[in-house]
Image 1 (cartoon, rainbow, N blue to C red):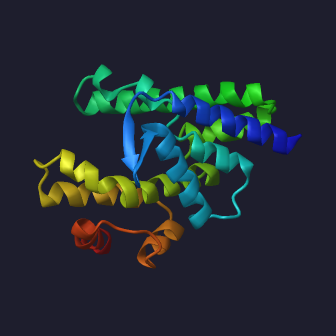
Image 2 (cartoon, rainbow, N blue to C red):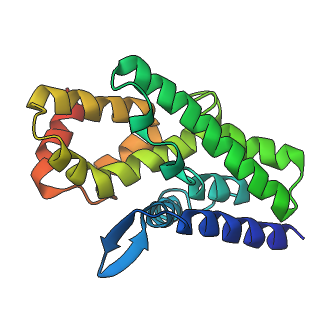
Length: 200
């Protein structure tokens, strides 16, 4: 029964992310953007914490579920608007995955555990939330930091150091060691800056 629930839940999450109208090319294949992100999250979890249980596997795959339905542009383009967007976005992700897990047959206790992580509840005290945050940070550094840099040519070196340090500070000591040991592929053009940010 548990395996059936997991397989159904994973299929529902993938189907939800397949609806993304935004596309991204990776290794010659055209992907729905959030489905590709979900796959990258799952792949990184397998590399970083291969013994993670089903709750974490589902939380990781649902980290950005249907994110395009709550665009940043719907909120004021200032710090307050950003934090409002992030707060409501986390709730949207948690509510969305909760509905899908219920459809898959999971009980409330399991659903609550997944939604706590997806909703970013109690970072630093909830090990599930921390693990999800670690994986998200690793995926961002390996797959998305370079493109993000290209979108913001106006940022100076100090701004980038601050951004990288914020990501670093959200991650656990285990994730720090994973990076420093060379287990993720850092973009060549930013590797020196990343190392500077985390060594100061």
